Image (cartoon, rainbow, N blue to C red; front, side, top):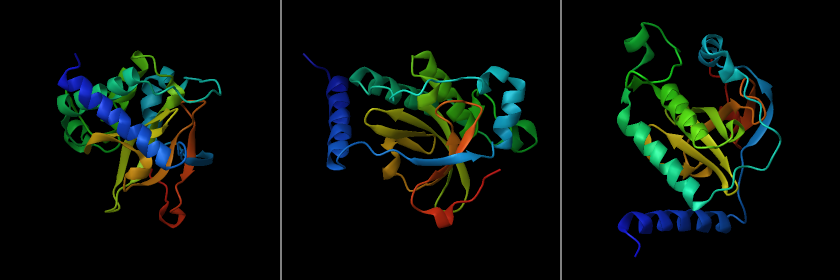
Length: 200
């Protein structure tokens, strides 16, 4: 007999499949050419060079199974609840320090790095786990994790407990890691090009 957790998971998956079907298939972000790497990511890669050497073959996005969906939800919830928000200035005395939140504290990029690390450990390819820079409706820059799947792209966000399709968020998408090389960043055109600006 299926428990409450299993029923909720099936309902969530049904909602994902339903939304995708309503859109006549998965919707993916339109990316452009190579763009500037955020300074925080550049310095992060200087400290941990292997973080910028993950090369992924050109393949279809990872298959979104019920098991993977459950893993995505679990990782998002676990990191959002276990990491306490702190600004870089509070932790390091300067801005734009990207790091794993091993101390239990971090800002948006640190949440993203941890979720990416845990999903890679669960077997999701690096090219389907993309650190993404967005602009919030209030104009502030922010970082989220984009997960590319066979049913479209989903956003893991420390400001939102629910994993959402990227098209359901109110962010303006600016740039993200390349699907082929974790050290390369590409621009994004999400249809609101006049609001797009580089976040450094």
